Image (tube, rainbow, N blue to C red; front, top):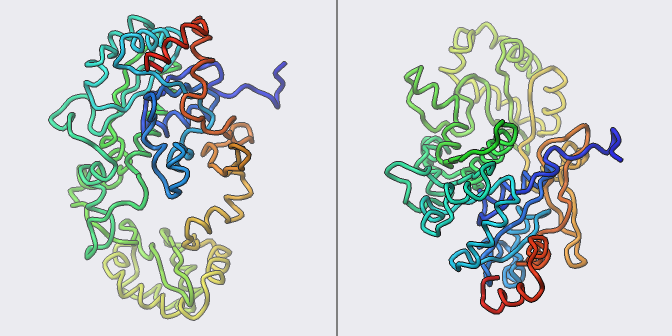
Length: 400
């Protein structure tokens, strides 16, 4: 019996077929799994998702459980299926008939060439939500170009505004295009699940997802006519707002409001700057940000970062430390809210991020470890009605 403290997960009862590889698609389906969907990962026999061979641990890569795979595939089932074989195509159609969602991130046209495109699968299940993730979308002059995260970061314009004027273009330090594309796809799938009548073809472009995430930059160009440019750690909308040196480690200060600016300089013992014509208005401070930085850092460098973070926040001036990833994961704010959970994998405890959201005060965490390649093939096919003899024959033929 479901109680108020045991409410079903938001996507409980939803079945997702995950035909994706590496990151954008697996990240999308991982978010759906965290929200309670049953995700069946359909992989190539023998090799599976390429991410199984990727990551910082060569031993795990050799065992087909690379860290890149572990990061995005917990809570899923895995079956192997040769989609080029007639029997494999027929089995996928049977799986589709009992599914709610199919997600794939092949190049546009691949599923059609396999005879498994949207129109074919919709005939097997008119209520199917078919989500196609690609670098550039299902049409247009770039649609057939290979599209890794690095390529999309360049084509989207994101690299051109990342870094300082003397270092740009610079790639963002993690696969932001894959991640934005995957999160956009997960949002679109969740929205489509609410539509009545249900059934849709979702065309997700990683490039468009990344451009959309640059809303202010794009709008400043389209509406304000301001050429997008790299500004390093400076906030182009205000000053002082950016990264500042202290006696030990850098800190971020965002004194975006006049009241915050005034509190900042008073705390630093520089109240005369308030009436200085060079800094009287926001636009004045923006125009003279380098001189302003020098004046502020002359004081900030006299005390360590921890002192200024505490003192400035106490005065209502938004301030924070600049942490490394390891430090961020151990920060009490992140640690105590339970973002990182654990699963047991072959007797080993594996730490993985849960959902980036809490539902009724609870953090969705993966319900099971990442699956071994094909670990659930027999169970899933038996659920379709195949006999052990039929499954054995498919295995001998290399279909599974």
